[in-house]
Length: 246
Image (cartoon, rainbow, N blue to C red; front, top):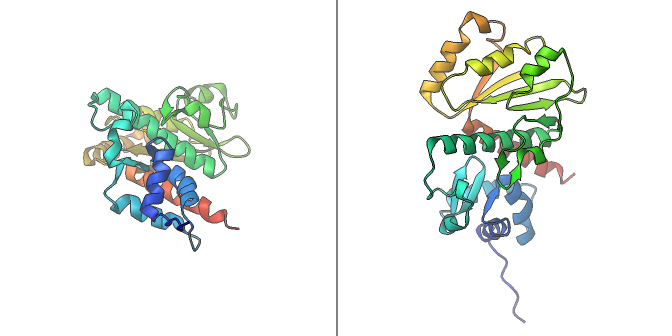
């Protein structure tokens, strides 16, 4: 019987994406693709990163999310680029997707993750199914809890205090997010705003943060775009994969 030819990395990635329902995050590809191909060394994720970016058969749908260019018709409607969506629909889809990435990053780092948007969908799962903290811990006074519970994503440490808080802004108005952050000014908490890469949004943020109402947190806010979240997601997954060898 002739020996079966071992698939290339591109073929292994393609098989992984098909197995995952024609759409897959990098985390899923990292987990499944090596089952179709033997590899040498400790960093197959670097090869996978290079293939999904350079091989034209792979199509980047969103940060860290890929499909097969020749099978767009097999995607869920919300992710199919050939199905036109309203601006409002795009905002909802992008918002829940970035929330999902932030939750996965938090989970990988051992934080307890929380979002108030439990029914929002990240790929085929509800966000409520991937968070690890189903209810907001009573870590402080009730009026602060009341404001905190509406923050898009929160990572809690082992003592149930907020380590990092994230607000995802698709509009140019950052005021509501900053008001939520001010409530946590007395905690040692990372405060992070995420928005699409857009110079007008950066200028608006810079204008808002200069207002006296936000002076107490002005130097604590970090502002990142979607591309940064994708890079962080890649780094965290790669680090996790590397740990598995020890």
